[in-house]
Length: 209
Image (cartoon, rainbow, N blue to C red; front, top):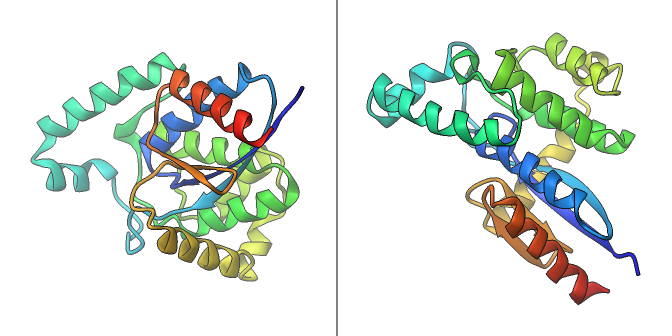
């Protein structure tokens, strides 16, 4: 008997753990015996983030200098490599991700949300693309199957949807991402292992089947 499991994932495209968690979860879904629908929900690690400059500079200030940041990068680089993910954190640019989340909301309406999310993740974490720039967001979205984004961003589309979903995350008490909610009931926090996600999917399916 095939099962359908609905999952909402609260995430921020500048979050490396979210980038990693998406890959691990996708691997678990591949081995799952039922159907899975994933809806990406917005969360902002830093709602007041300004545009411009390399992420490394702010990380060094926050975590105690460039040597500490280099150690963090190497650890994360190894985890990304295990999932076959390109990763070049030294290229990453500071971004306020609200507009990127607006694009993700548009992509959900068009049925290409996961593809757009994946493209935005790669653009930030591996390619040093500027997610503050509407032209860049439009180009990336088009590559993932969502054309016409620049005009829609200029018209303010997606603002209300993102505001509402950010409030949902707040009222749910989401304080870190990635945050996976299964069937609106069971929650898993963090970029857990593929095996953990496989077990979670099986357990949820047994409860909803």
